[in-house]
Image 1 (cartoon, rainbow, N blue to C red):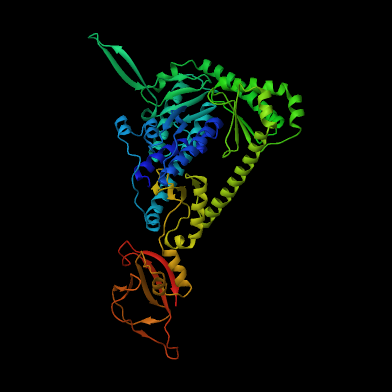
Image 2 (cartoon, rainbow, N blue to C red):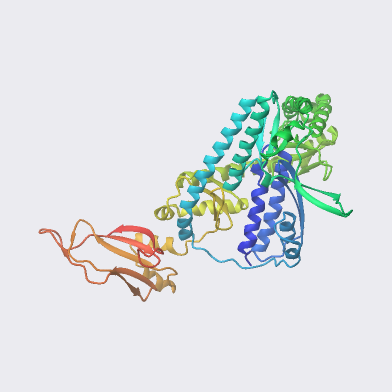
Length: 556
């Protein structure tokens, strides 16, 4: 039983918020999202196969107004994804209670859909890139003009044109506020600013007693504040931006930023030493808060104090996995999954415990599994790059499971010639997914198991000189698509023409579009009796009616 289009759409909305590539600066959250996506993919795969999936617990991190927030969901063995959708606010409590986990999905003609979508997708992607460049340039200009350390507006990655336009509006408001206060003598040297558009900022609710003595509740957008790391959080409201900035203690923000930078500096100093000592591929740590940075520094220092014992026990061994050191109290001290090249270690994990794991059979097996995962990723990346070059794509990314990615990439390469005769994908951005969709950013979701029906095989038969009717008779099958042919003389002068009409081929079930009247051609004297014609093969209804797709040209 297939999932409905609505269900797939909601899943994709979640994936776009939690995709690991969006969390490159937060390794722990990146790995957590990656692991949960694998669990979710397995759950959905069982549903697609009509199986009853086992219960699953999902834990994702998302960015909301610049902060990392956790989203958790327990998926039951009944095959319902409603708890996940509810945790992301995509459905109501009533919809959660009445959710139906199964529905059917309609098939889509791949070539016709792609042909209709690609132009709009490329245009949208170009607008998206232009706005992205404008936002980046605007941020750099503000940082240089006011000697700011950093300016971040909204989410790290804007996924729609409307969101990008809001970011430009917010930066314009910030420039107004900073410029007017700078002229009054205020200095912003060394500050980091996190900016929010009023339509996309966190909201606060508070209770108060009105004049009649009754309690009331009021909700408004957040007040400006200084975070523990010294970042100044502001709402880009042109009517209040000046007052927001003037109300903050900017000297305190600079002091907190100095302390946070000190701990970040220590993290950067100790990370290479820990990586070399343990012989792992890389070491990352959770530095989203100053406290997490401190915990890593203390853990790394304790580990390096034992460097002689560690070197003696490891004996120069190296490992294929990378290390993520985090401060989450949930879960085991050491956690590894065979589908990932990452070893998760808590900052309260004793060095001796980690050392025992590394030299154990489990540690060796983890390294071998990481090697295989890395090799698989390299093969996958090479195949995707081959697809990108074959179609002249701007980029190609994956949304579906790894094994489905390989299947989809192979299918694209297999049908590359046929697809390119129908639609020009040069400059487009493709996402290998499980459905058809045009993203707000201009990406085109293409299902890994897209169908071109029986057309490619029939084209190959025609190219090899076989007749479709002969093959159809021998196989006891009929064509599932309409074929349209137009004969155009090659190098000859046409004396009479007629409108295109359809004539059925009864043994095949196709329709060939030819001239309604016999064609008469003037043959130059001295030429052979045979006539050379260019055959243009279409699929669909008559050429010129919008539903006809050019497939192949032949000269016979």
